Image 1 (cartoon, rainbow, N blue to C red):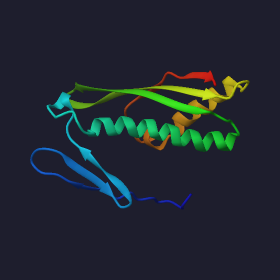
Image 2: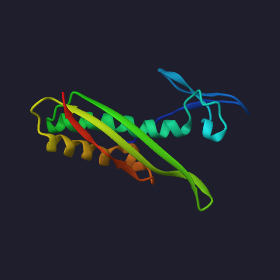
Image 3: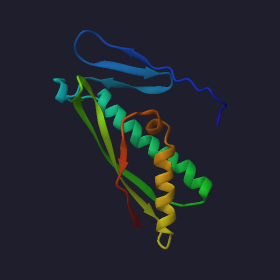
Image 4: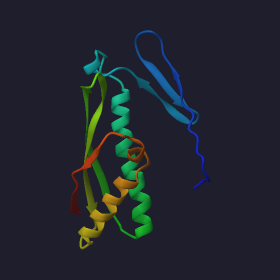
Length: 144
């Protein structure tokens, strides 16, 4: 890992209507628009989808690092997630994110240890730690 601080530069191009794009050098552009719930077309990534996806991907990448350091093997991780947006006290905001990870571990592995590593990964995830929104995890561990 490189020494801190880390900086991430992202460029956005958009106009008064339609889609926008976000980009950063060396990575494919993403097409962005408002979601259907906010009268958008619903055919592109929205800030709301990106926030939930950031929590999901951070869980996976953190799990990879912690599992490797803990010598806990896993076969795969699939994470369904739901972010809830509500209006409260005059502010529209995320009021909760529920992660439903399905961690597949090798047959005969220690399920309790795998769950501990998964829970530790959720708590140490950079994105989750940076949010004021509560994140709850409903984990499933299976052998495969």
